[in-house]
Amino acid sequence: MASTRDTTRRTLLLAAGDSVEAAGERFRHAAQAGTLHELLGADFTVPGVRANDAVQWIYDNGMVNTRKGRAIYDQLMAAPADERCPLCGHGVVRTLDHYLPKKMFPALCVDPLNLIPACADCNHTKGDIQPTGPEKTPIHPYLDCIDNESWLEAKVVGSEPVWLDFYVSPPPTWDSHLASRTRHHFELFGLAELFSLQANRTLNSIRQHLTSAFEAGGEDLVRAYLTDEASTRLAHRPNGWEGVTYRTLAQDEAFCSGTFIL
Ligand SMILES: [Zn+2]
Image (cartoon, rainbow, N blue to C red; front, side, top):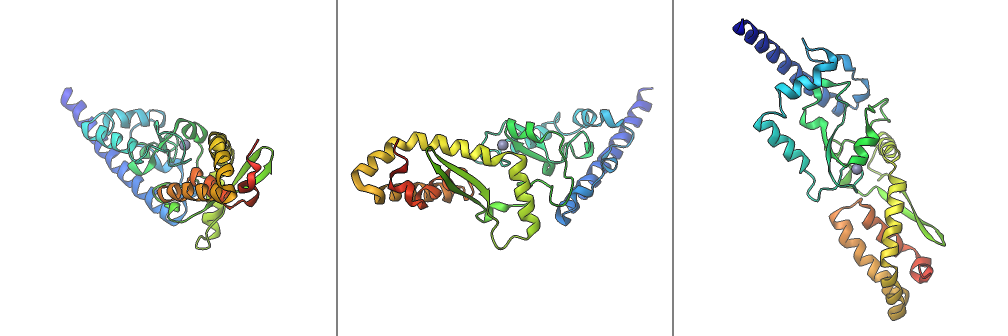
């Protein structure tokens, strides 16, 4: 009896291995072709395993419970050098998000390219959302590599209190498709609100320093300080909200002339 059970299990494992591998290939091909929204969950099941049980079955028999699997899992969690979440560029990595939801695409639940280290907020926001159209496909941090160019900008709105409005400013090299996807991503994860709040917090924390600089050297010293802070941060993270905050403030004449003084 035991050997019959072992043979069945072996057959099932081999079939599952093949389907997981084929699923990974379909995923990569679609990502490259920009057709992730056309993928159907029905093509990402595991043969011989009920759809509802598939994810647990893969975890139990596959990657996460093996030593090698654990190593890959840990490596992914530690992937961003400074532990910032690659989906928002702000939160601390606490979890692995399934780019294509594991509920609908169980065969991809342990595919390293479908596992994105994420902060709890982004993981929660995304939930089981899947791409619904070519322009409603969130940015994949490793496949899309949008941070090679500068795309995040902000402008100062209002002076009492000073408030920054963040937006996506697509570089000329991008096609309209990538621009729409980035805007969709920005909206989906609520990045305009998140960045504005953080910028405001930063401004409050440096206000005293800016006031002293203004008293000592006027707007030139304020601008020099902000420009210096901006270039340090942007060199490290070209589309980080911190660097963009400093750059935006440095470029705003009214701000450097003292609108920050309460
Ligand atoms: Zn995040």
